[in-house]
Length: 143
Image 1 (tube, rainbow, N blue to C red):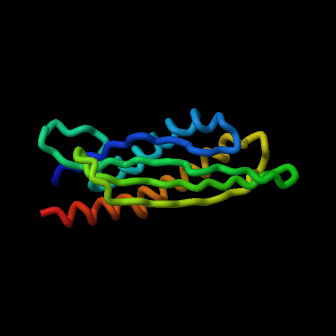
Image 2: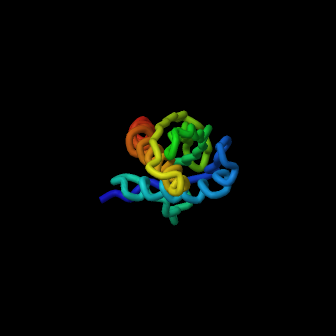
Image 3: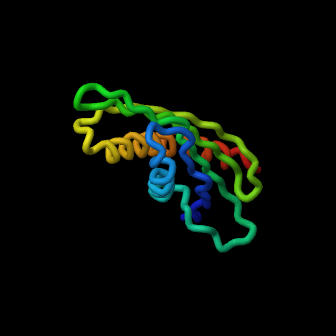
């Protein structure tokens, strides 16, 4: 079995949110979500390689916006995210991905959990359905 290719997760941030607390609370959760999705893949790991000549990929993510539209005792949470892919360690960018989604909260008291659920669902989808296939294609294209 071949070694898994290294992926560094960097610079996760929140650009705009209806509540500014998400700019500090979501990045750690987002990083953990991306790392979990990468580490559960067949070909990639976030464990840094011991080989000084190893190559791999960078994944950088951003919540472009998180909005909330109140609907009585519930709210609609909508998030838009972007993800950038680059070669590691060269930082030669090659992938620019976008995703989004929304959900209706069942109870405004669970708002933070609902925001986290929307963001992590979008991230998991971006990593598994777009980022990993893009990294696979890039790896196959290398001589």
